[in-house]
Image (cartoon, rainbow, N blue to C red; front, side):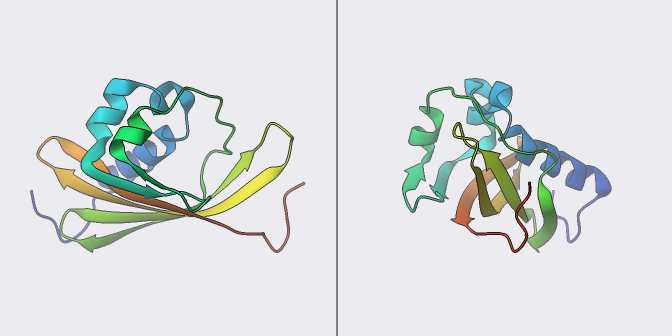
Length: 131
């Protein structure tokens, strides 16, 4: 299905899928991740490390303390059936420190549904940090 614009249902589903990546019960659900990470998925982590699909699928379960809903979220159609989600994440580390990251994900609509093809995180310091 080729589209030149996104429906409200598409937008809601994409936001739901992106937020699911931040919930431990879905992020560490092997079937969910296999269904929603493209075969050629790649991530440029906030640390500067590069991760492929196999590394992401093999990640050990751990607590995720990300503030939801995601901040400053924008959804934009970049090509037929390809969407970019841009947002900021705020994760509370075990030390209590807040970690802020600008995020970008590329999602592609396939015959089997939406798959994440690329994700990048870039650390930043907010002008006015959360208390």
